[in-house]
Image 1 (cartoon, helix red, strand yellow):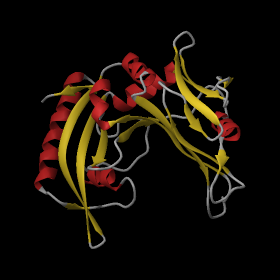
Image 2 (cartoon, rainbow, N blue to C red):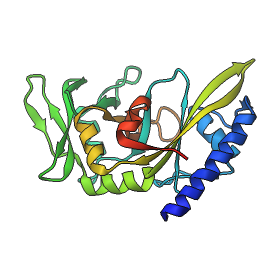
Image 3 (cartoon, rainbow, N blue to C red):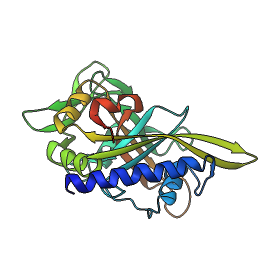
Length: 250
């Protein structure tokens, strides 16, 4: 999308946000964890989708409920260096579920500036510039490296980052539960433009961008016991957004 076109879309979004603010408290139009985001999309007349690209006229929409956990998801991307790497990670590093001990899960976050203990092993991200990959390193309890082949390629990471997050609209939201009915109030919007891929890698090294794995299994129904990959997400705290993005002042 050309610069003039995206600027026009950003200006239109700013106007639409002003209209939404005038409504004050708005009944939720969806259910579950993503209700604030989906309600916003409906207010903006955006159809629901799961595409790995910016979701509103070239602009990625992100919502953050006041008082909630500070990390927000940037984008999701499974290990890409070999087929079935997520399954291999679950087999190697998974730990037994506390309720169904016959099945393994791997639900944890990993950083680039220290090794995190998950189950019996330690995990850390490494930006490997010579090989142009971000590696998932696994160490045993004695600090010995036992796995370094799992990775994401720079090529795929950069493609996903730039397609998804070249422009970002970040909304702060208040949530109110009244007699079992949920209401949202969209209090603030900031517009951002991505700095560059090099800064993204730098933030991984510093531990500002982390990766969260959600490997589990289906807990009921006909797929009970089968692997359920709920996504591998690159995340950043909301107050660190300006380390990855430049503010746009319209």
